[in-house]
Image (cartoon, rainbow, N blue to C red):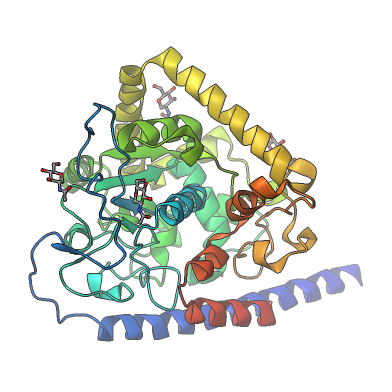
Length: 422
Ligand SMILES: *[C@@H]1O[C@H](CO)[C@@H](O)[C@H](O)[C@H]1NC(C)=O
Ligand SMILES: *[C@@H]1O[C@H](CO)[C@@H](O)[C@H](O)[C@H]1NC(C)=O
Ligand SMILES: *[C@@H]1O[C@H](CO)[C@@H](O)[C@H](O)[C@H]1NC(C)=O
Ligand SMILES: *[C@@H]1O[C@H](CO)[C@@H](O)[C@H](O)[C@H]1NC(C)=O
């Protein structure tokens, strides 16, 4: 009896998963068609934009490192390459607040919250794009394409991005995109990730739909070939190209240190760095990797592992140059300020299950078929002086983009289908 019930439930959940997966697939196919029809008319244009748009902050400060008094001036022109599953949503929230505060122009996608990922980025995907027009900030998910990005920004814009340990990233991506990657559907047992890693070659083919989520996702996001073996010369060449393109590569594992380096690079203030960790996963849904599995995950994601190690080394050289003890002091200060904000803003002081969040505007987006991403409740009776800041700090990406005036009809349509079926 019990066996039958369990099996029944398993069938039910599998059927539901398949339905959701099929739906996701057709959704992605529609999007792909929409995106490819919008392409292909772009001739080679000048590499960077040439004239500021109306509303662009033209205070002439963002183009020079030092002002009259010898003080540095805050950098306003920024390309943030938002990688997947790397704490990039937390950084996005920081950029949204910075941009709002200085009334900067964001190059946003149209209708959805990414630039037709996984298609390579094209400037024509930007809402209200006109050739030659300058924006200040580009920060939504895309498959990186430097020549197209450069068309949107002044030549001296700062390029930044964030990486995460590829083994952890793989685990996170496997969990999050499981239902979007058909090649995982046939893997049986409770330890699907372990089964996959024991012999990835027997499940994975590069041509399989959405397979990039499961191999060298960082390489893929940066527009490189995610199926290269780590010792292929193109891996090293890709890494070298990225190290020329990006001024600063942040590390999710050292998030506070990263932000302090960001502040130094962009001449920002400490208060620009305040954050709460957004899009954190429930502990119970995280598979802790054994050393054996970790080694397998790193081998399987060998190109990303080389990428990560390269930038981990340059990151710590930057910390060294900044000064170890100065860094420790600044990190302590940032943590103190964030803890202070958490006490002011967050009900109970901690992240909670999405079902426990009473304000819909603060509920984070969930992966297909699950509710594993935590969010926050805003405290009641917040000192009016902090109310606005608290709210913005706790607002998830989708809702924040709506507030910034982006129409997300495709994202909402998909969200509605996803929630209806699962
Ligand atoms: C902008 O800054 C440059 C130096 O960085 C200066 O030569 C120029 O006069 C400034 N323009 C305006 C409009 O302030
Ligand atoms: C432009 O940026 C400067 C520097 O942060 C800021 O003081 C100024 O208020 C901004 N201008 C507008 C119109 O927002
Ligand atoms: C989740 O796990 C981490 C690391 O094991 C631990 O530090 C943290 O306190 C846990 N959080 C909760 C809410 O249990
Ligand atoms: C990154 O570099 C730091 C400092 O050298 C080192 O302690 C850490 O183990 C490195 N991380 C990885 C995953 O290699």
